[in-house]
Length: 124
Image 1 (tube, helix red, strand yellow):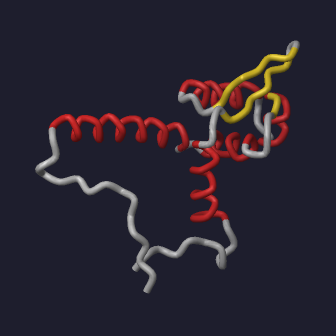
Image 2 (cartoon, helix red, strand yellow):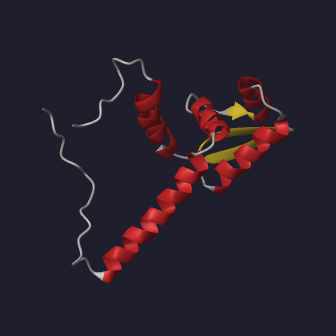
């Protein structure tokens, strides 16, 4: 059996209060990010943006969704710092702010979307 070494820290009762506070702040940040990703519409927007910048109109067409719904989801992703807007005339284009969403989507794809032979197997 292949057991990979975890990169996760071990939380112990003898940790300093400052270290515990830092871990709690990080957990709150991670929770906010995961809440932003916990909507299928936002996930699909991010999936489309992984391949490059898209206009709001392009996203509406790709998602078969109304402009108001797409704009609402983009606003939440923008609030969380996951996407960045760029205006060109009347059109607004969105792109991923950094690599975080791509890295998370790769794990989600591996767990939920990859063909069975590619899916990650849970460690036993």
